[in-house]
Image 1 (cartoon, rainbow, N blue to C red):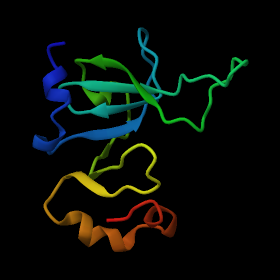
Image 2 (cartoon, rainbow, N blue to C red; image 1 turned 30 degrees about the horizontal axis):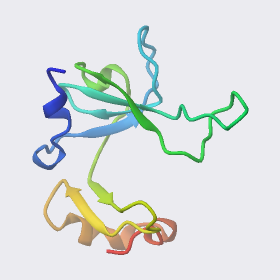
Image 3 (cartoon, helix red, strand yellow; image 1 turned 120 degrees about the vertical axis):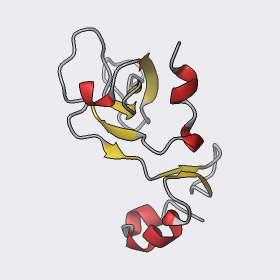
Image 4 (tube, rainbow, N blue to C red; image 1 turned 60 degrees about the horizontal axis):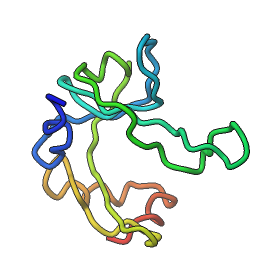
Length: 123
């Protein structure tokens, strides 16, 4: 609880990273992490396909844990979060830029996105 406010203040931080959890840890279970040197929010795809014990990989991972350790304790190669895009439920494309690591970087970098990624964005 001590780091929750820091972890959720994405707009005022310039050092958030994201990565696949690939380091062995004893007391927690999640697939990917978002965080910095102060804390980590772990995400996992725990939604099961109805009537089975299999995880539904079509569903996005959801937050499952909040830890006050560095992201490098769980991910050997975390990557910088450069942009966070937003859309409402029911919308097919992301139409709002919630966060960018540097002002106007999204507009500069957007031309280098893959066609598949561009088709998901309407800004």
